[in-house]
Image (tube, rainbow, N blue to C red; front, top):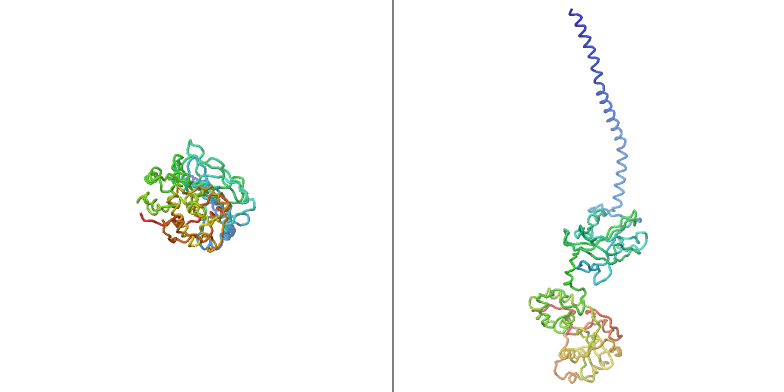
Amino acid sequence: MEGPNILTRGKRNLEGDEEQPERKRPALASVIIEALKVDSLQKLCSSLEPILRRVVSEEVERALAKLGPARISGRSSPKRIEGPDGRSLQLHFRSRLSLPLFTGGKVEGEQGAAIHIVLLDANSRRVITSGPESCVKLDVVVLEGDFNNEDDEDWSQEEFESHVVKEREGKRPLLTGDLQVTMKEGVGTLGELTFTDNSSWIRSRKFRLGLKVAPGFGEGIRIREAKTEAFTVKDHRGELYKKHYPPALNDEVWRLEKIGKDGSFHKRLNNAGILTVEDFLRLVVRDPQKLRNILGTGMSNKMWDALIEHAKTCVLSGKLYVYYADDTRNFGVVFNNIYELSGLIAGEQYHPADSLSDTQKVYVDTLVKKAYENWNHVIEYDGKSLVNFRQTNKSVNELPIGEVDYSNSLDHQLPLTRLPVPVPSEPASMGSGLMSGDTQPSPIWEIPILAHSLTLVHFPRMTN
């Protein structure tokens, strides 16, 4: 009985042994397939490796060649995109802005000049005047004030775009006006631009103006964008207290630096009858120490220097005054409208102040003192009245003034003293203007002057 059972169990075992491998074949097949795949991938990588190495090596060499030997040896800087002929191209603001800026006010260059932009070859710093890149259109944008504080560093287009400032939500466009500039032969000029919002709400509290190539221009050429210095845009209410650069003669005196509107210095000057910039400059010429005394000890030497430096940028009007030595009107000294000495009238000849001899300077110096003491006897001229006087370049001995009896002309009231400072040897523009009738305004420092007005040019520090 047991024999058949054994045979039956053996048969089942054999059948089971034959059936078990059949159930594991898919797993074995998968392993074989995966092994074949790995082997094939390794062979593929082995075959691609030399090709990839060669391509990478060639690209690295090409990039290093563009950087040049100097950049390979030193610190590597951000990439600089080149023009079609290998030049590195940059936009650059040629003009500086007139600061501070106010909302609603026109964006201008210093002293009201236009703001110019140029396209430069970054290596030679020369303007690119030809080629398609020299006549591209530019977009004007506003940048954050802390964008790229280092002027000598490059930046990528993405970095530039990431610092563009847009208007606040619910506000008008931040910058309005002519928001595009057309370059011509590598030069462009900004049109009228106005800020509608102040800069107090951004992180740096300052803006920059930026310029970038407009879409559709300069395709395939990367031209580095331009940026101005960082500046503050204030609310237009602050313009009521704005200083003027340059100041005008009829400006109220607080328009000068270091003189705050309704401040202590302003009140002191007003109480002394100094209401305008012209009044201020006249006292600087005639008696600078008196002016220092009016301002008081609160005006330090540093503040005084800044105040005078600003005041002397004022443009003169061309008005002239003459003071004659006596009723014969043969001799007289000529002043400009802030009472600086411009020259001498002797007979029918006009002598610029810088052409006088030492002896003549002594005589003129005493006449100047007398004129200041008797200013009500000074006659106002319009500048053209001196056209009929002939200018002379004669030597000292040939001038008629050398034969005059100085003592009789001066009523023995003023001592004859030498000038403490030599008069400039080069003729100044005011002298020639007096002879030709040219009444165009002249900057203060171009007018020849003598002892009593030398402080306006040299502005020495004085003791309080």
